[in-house]
Amino acid sequence: QVQLVESGGGVVQAGASLRLSCAASGRTFSRQVMGWFRQAPEKEREFVAGITWRGVTYYGDSLKGRFTISRDDARNTVSLQMNNLKPEDTAVYYCAADSMPYRGSVPRVPREYEYWGQGTQVTVSS
Image 1 (cartoon, rainbow, N blue to C red):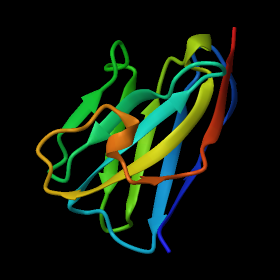
Image 2 (cartoon, rainbow, N blue to C red; image 1 turned 180 degrees about the vertical axis):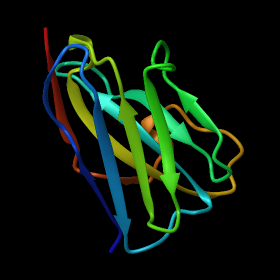
Image 3 (cartoon, rainbow, N blue to C red; image 1 turned 135 degrees about the vertical axis):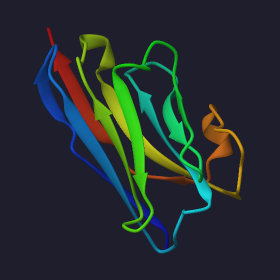
């Protein structure tokens, strides 16, 4: 059974940093894209960041420079470093993994990802 488990969410003040981690089990994703999405109340799930099997990174609009995605294939994990957090970053953050190997770019729509974690809440107060 494949599982993605996120950790690292919490409540912080604006300007703070958080590091989210996602641990995969049941299979490895070293040849697949892994990504992070977020969903705020009453909003659609939004692409945050993704990383290809080669380590090429992609970010959602206006997030590059504050957020950094990385992967550790030896540990089957993907992380999201979030700096200078803003109240508008408040959302549930989801880890996602593709099933297609060797994809050259990162999909930005949720339907392209087969595996999902349960999410971790990030709340940023002003």
